[in-house]
Image (cartoon, rainbow, N blue to C red; front, side, top):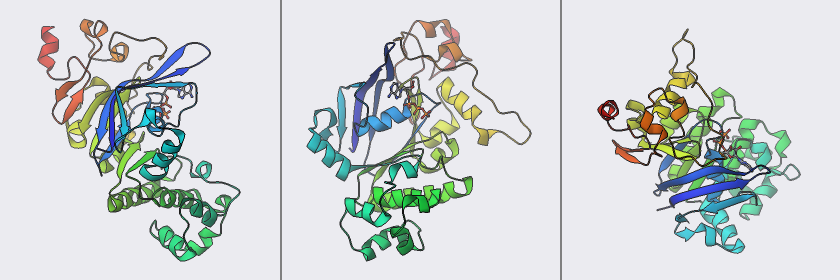
Length: 317
Ligand SMILES: Nc1ncnc2c1ncn2[C@@H]1O[C@H](COP(=O)(O)OP(=O)(O)OP(=O)(O)O)[C@@H](O)[C@H]1O
């Protein structure tokens, strides 16, 4: 197992009160697996991605029953062990490649900070991510590269040490639509070659559907549904997943209005003993405000809805 997470909670202390960004999140990632995390803004996707590498600010408190990456208990790692984990086992790609690159250093110098290699080897790595003029790119500074080119460079750099897990947080959000597919194809193909698992965070449901084997739908800091991709799209079990799939721009037909999910997600300051989606749920039942739903098994995964399994149950309740 590359990632083993059980009951992971993250709270940020803010001026007002503690904000519960993650609330008892559990999941695992097998070697080479491709898992997508989707959900509205503020649902906790980036917090989760950053927690895995302990990249959170000091205002964050992490609690977990199990939090292991590559067999190592992450909360217990010393700074030195954590550096090794970040250097050897996991790698990140973020939305803005320019922010990930050092503006004061040419690309070759930045790549050599990761692995000391000669120009020919570095050129080969850039060619491996579809860069046709690697020599020019090696001698360039980040501001001299286009966004697409810079993201290819960060992919090449992220994979240099053959990580076992790549965490890609909205890696193509800053790119033109025409480049998105190309960069995503490349990212997943290169990860498959080296056997790296991918944790892919995105707002783009068609992209997640295309590339991931499993999908976790997040709402208010919880994974409300985790399913095999085909099962989720064929028959979403949680009303929030259904709403999200319905609100997806790609799902709308020409001339149809987009479906927005009515209401807003809850503020995450108060612990709640009800289903957090209840105030917005089109299928809400009185029981939903009395119970905090836990996972129910559904075809190809699980969902946190009291009525995930059987609509008849809801009618009887
Ligand atoms: N450093 C921080 N201090 C306080 N609150 C934070 C901090 N980082 C994130 N949060 C809060 O935690 C919650 C989850 O945020 P997060 O960025 O993880 O969501 P997200 O699903 O990744 O959203 P988006 O899709 O917009 O990136 C939000 O309420 C956010 O305001």
